[in-house]
Image (cartoon, rainbow, N blue to C red; front, side, top):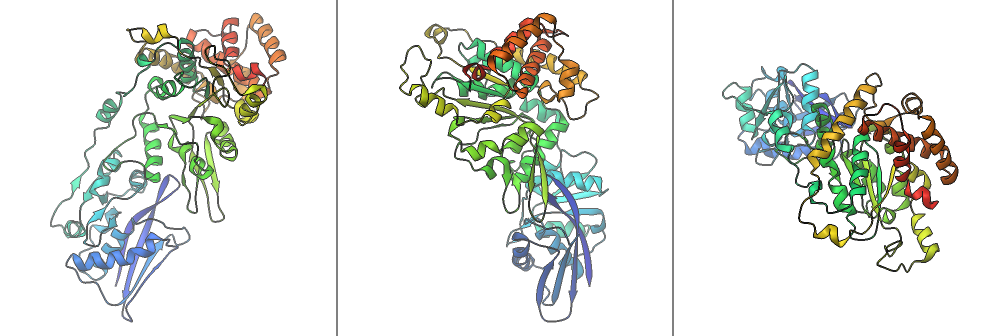
Length: 510
């Protein structure tokens, strides 16, 4: 007796279909699962046995062999419980298998037969649609997530008995009903706003420039100057996510297991703020069976690293590849996975260990050597990859006492959207480039031509600051973004001079 059930597994952030073949033969009672099953897949046979017995069906005391094809790819997770149980019931003719050929089945089983949610429902739905499946059957808690995929019937089941009745044609399962446009409208409302920030006009302007060109930014200032408050409001001025961006970001969150069950889509730009004690695997991704790290969870949004020098040096150095390439490649002996990691880095740090270097109202007790040693915790190559170095001074009392609010995020976002539109048109024929921060050297040569007056200013600044080639390119990218905000085709002296101001650590000689 042989039964075949289609299921799926996740590899990286994408899914592929798996044929769950169940063979039941006479012989001593055994239950063998082959096809490179790992961990939870192997343990699934105990859950399957209990679920079938407690649901009122008969578990066959024969030789059971379950093959997960393709057999040369590792399978992980508890999502194979449900297709294995259905395969056993179909092979023993306790249910009919007419509908099995047209559906993909995925889910974890409880011992009482309940179907529990699993990771990766969205990539599985996309894979099922690409394979031409008629329907996807999965736990009810995953309905909202998988239901955003159009062109595929997504059905939810709460228990093994309910799914068995559906396969026998006695009942119909609840389909997913997700209004994507309504989801985007609900997520458009931000909980924080730039209008709440008192003072700091220079910092607000710098963050507007950063958002307009997708530039990385480092905020340097004393404690209480508002660095974290400013950074947390950066996503509120970024352009709204497109459906394609939202789907890719949701896939990452689903695979990592951080998407709340019942939530359909990550329709708001992510803001991730890991603690400085995080490991390199936690930040970049990895593990024995690799999972996305914080840099991938921040894909399409902002990664905020507060107290940057407190992060371990080896952790900070692994940021180089995603900052440069927008992806993370994790290589293991058995596999190599690539995760998207196109994020904006927003980092914050004090100017010295005590935090008061350069502050007019407090005395710094660190001394020049202590300040230099503290700043040196962040390597030069990493600083080169951060476009804007921004000084955030203490807020004056007059600014704190003002009754009126500042400019709201919505007004800033309008200017950012106009600048991003210019950039999308500029890079329409350059796949993979969506903003000025992503320009390659040839794009800089083509789009960052400076006027005669600006050329002399840039030459003087480079000679005095000793900018590296990467630092020089950063200045040109920032100037290009400032010109886009200004609606200017050429880089004027005022655009270049403002861009140079945003390299404060270069002026210190760090």
